[in-house]
Image (cartoon, rainbow, N blue to C red):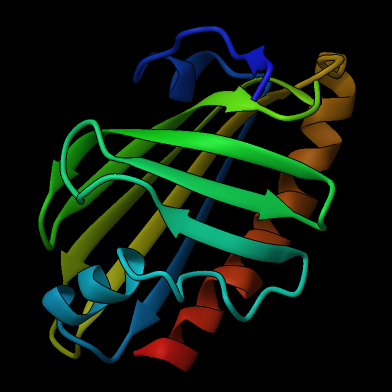
Length: 156
C-alpha cells in the first residue's frame, strides 16, 4: 500500500476532527464478544466492508487488512490488546489517499446481563472537514455506527 498515514496515539481520540462514539448492550459475556471482535467475521454483516484479514497473530502490534467497497484497503495496527477488555488500533497505510488519520477503540464492560461494548472512532478524512461540518457530521455518524455495531449479534 503506497500511502502512509501520520502516526497517532490515544491523544487523537481527544483532538481528531471527528470523534464518534457508539455503544451497544449485548447479551453475551465479554469473552464471547472479544472472540467475535477478533474474528475474520467481524463486520461481515456490513456490505461495504468486503474483506477483512488478519495478517499477524492477535496481540499488541497485530496487523489486520480491511477493504471497503472494493475501492480502498487499509492496514490497521493494534497498539492496545487487553483480552476480553479493550483493543485499540490506528490505520498505518492505505491504498488510496482518503484519510489523514484514523484510530478505533473497543471497550468491553461486563454488565448484569452481558457486555456493554463501546466503539470510539476518531478520524481525520482527507481533506479534513471544517469544525462546523464535523460538528454536524458527528451525530449522524454516531447513529450509523451504533446501528452497524449492533450487527455483531449476528456472529455472537
